[in-house]
Length: 431
Image (cartoon, rainbow, N blue to C red; front, top):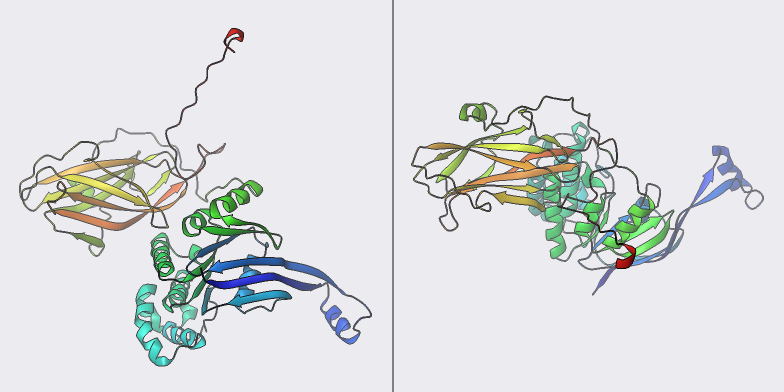
């Protein structure tokens, strides 16, 4: 394997002064008095990263992660040690870093390309792809000082990954975008890694680290505490700094649970969440005309408590004779991983035959025995495999799963699986 980044015995020291005048005193009276305290942000950091590898870095705030990345990218000067990078480095270290607020988004794209050594002709080939990925519409020709934080990160990330770097450095930037953009970014990161780009990924999101990175380094107070498989680094990190995690959501008021019945076609149409311009594909032999999402109290919502259900009521219309139809749902996490997928066909059920023009209402109920987070989902309808008649809507949501338990959480990890504990106490003569 080819090493594209080599860090040897890297250290970074800062001088901390109590008063600004103390710095001047040291300049004019060198060697006579020491007016500063030394703070070592990094001490003897050594690691190598191979081409095409995803290398994670985790640690608490103040552990030295950002300082390390800034030295690797040439933004900060090191105090001691060596850093050797073999190839072009593209960094996403801070939201909108390097953007001129008075320039338009388009001009900032060209400026970023020039700083990376691209000619205007080379940028002309890339700029449209960058703009399309960023998805900020006509704002691309507006000054970036008017951009929201989400628009900033979209454009900054698009500039970073579409420049075809040899080493891509990302420091927590993806936590700003919405769940749809995060899924899109993680998909692209996987693609560029497969093409040989090296990725150094810093995040407090341990799930993302374990999904993307085979190796991870844990920093503690500026020193390496662990380098190895990501599962080991995350386990060590969580065991060292384990804290109760709560999600900022208000506890819902108590409601009287009502008898849940499948919505009527009129109710589904009235509360339809599908957009005409949404992501949709299929042969249209049977189509989803409307979708309603509601909770156990019959409230239209896409926010649900852990271990509680949501109902997905679909209004279907057959455009030709359909036999043995089925509906399904797919749920994805922010990394784009398929968390759950099922349909009535997997339960051994089939929809009744439908003639052209006939409609039917189908309810799918999912109990969210998963950890608190944002999820997206897709719904589909089709005939038995091979018929090719189907309709599928994707990138729906987001579904927000929240936790409001006052005591210990009902489970640890990503999902609650069926689990039982049994015992048999032995008598003395049975030992």
